[in-house]
Image (cartoon, rainbow, N blue to C red; front, side):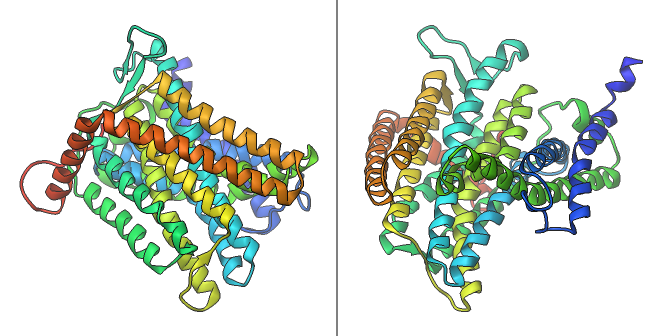
Length: 449
């Protein structure tokens, strides 16, 4: 009897059922853009039904991506998963960029604030939290990627060398990001470089080899046994359905969280930078936690790195496109000095995080440093905006951002120098992968398992 409830289709049915309350709310309200917490649904209900739908959709998305690994390179399947998982973040930022193109200066600042907040959450909470969760879960799952070492907080998650390609592309995007504020905005040249970099990355990973070295279990294993047509049908349904649910549910979910936050006196701008991105990043974190729970920590980290890469390239690059379409002419999405500082600290955090991964591992100690630096900076800014008048708070906040930027850069550069041999090997491996993918030279393209 119990075996019936363990059948993979039961798990799929449960995931689908979690989305039903949201679908009912969505249809009853009249479609996309009509669900507004506080008007036709309470804030608490929006958080509840939206949150359940996001959880259900995240599992469907993960299963579809794992099933797709039978037919396409794992790195490409995870790249698609990453794009769909962060699609809500694209939607929120695109909305602000559109309003900025229509003449709203504040909307331009909000677009940058939301984008930088999402990127820092992905590393500060995502990379660090998943690393700590992986090490914790390994005691039960026997995850081969976790190494237990003597010493204080030295246990580490080791990454597959195939992730070198993603890390290197992210390093290039991070180095470029330091120069964006110097022009006072995100313009056409930034779009060409960053979107072009992402397209090149996709071309490299899509031309990689399809590998079957890892045996799947549960739902993915069940659907991988199907013949090609029904298997691909499930994959396409999983991507399309979960993407639609996540895209439509996250904004009301975030709005509900914002309204609940306002009730407790949390400033609106702070929520737009931190609470809304946290909501939009939740599908991705759920997917990665699911992978880690299956002892697939390497695939989980590949998803996190891929998400950071597409947010740090495609997301930033498309902001200028949306702005220009709204404005009716090619232009630059301008922002103030506070948002310039936000971009610099985000780039600096990314630099430090990449430096940590140059030896293809992240230890408990390193994960805690990432988490503490992120948390203390956010809490410090929250204290400032709650304590001081707006003008004074802005000045102090910028000083805090510069201080943390300096800390991140010093730590990052120090690690790069210390691990220069590892950096050299990382770059050589990435160049070899890229050359093989585009048909220059010989060898096989490597991707993470």
